[in-house]
Image (cartoon, rainbow, N blue to C red; front, side, top):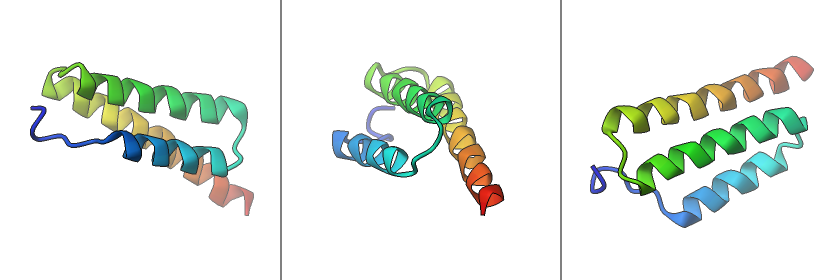
Length: 74
């Protein structure tokens, strides 16, 4: 599994930079950062493939929700 998933520290830093640049409400940002942390932890701890995928999807769902809120605000 570790060979199939290649997420470097730089990608995590970049993801966090993007999240902070959105200027979202703190609850949205906290949820997104927590989901990103859970996803990265699952990869680093070599969790089961199903666990990693579930955490990835949770992270994406939160980001989609944040994007939807941004579109409604325009």
